[in-house]
Image (cartoon, helix red, strand yellow):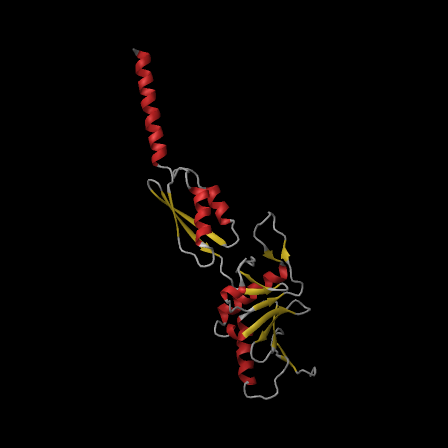
Length: 240
């Protein structure tokens, strides 16, 4: 009698446990709208990573696998009991086009983005490192990042955009000179302006003043150097 009672209790416990496990199994995964990532591919990836797992389990490894995708910056998971999971994805956004023999979009962390420039028609400043290159990825198919010179130029673009967002559309290119100083090239006149190792507010003020002065002049200089403390160096196309 005691054995039968124990068997009944154990069977009931097993049935309850099975029902609970099944009840909290993720059966529906919804994904927020994205701009650059193909929706069908993202839906399929999320289903393969999360569907069938317990909503009470540690979803960290699956989240990391999703976050490691080249176009994804952050992932947020919202559990909706008993069996639904909402996936919020923050995409990496291009801030510049790096010249690597062809123009390639990069984000604020200098990560190379596998996006078709022609398809999206990006109107972004071009950065041209002297030694254009990409750091090797630690994993096959993993995220690629620009080298030191490329990262310096990306930060220059970001700083310039924060300090002078109205002037950024008038810049066609950011590059580095032989001293490693940031040089911008204006879109209209092709004027080369040396800003220094980094983009600073004082140099933006000098640049605004200089461009205002040049509007009324017919003879345009070839280069303006704002990187020296307390002085502005102007050079003509003849080296004057």
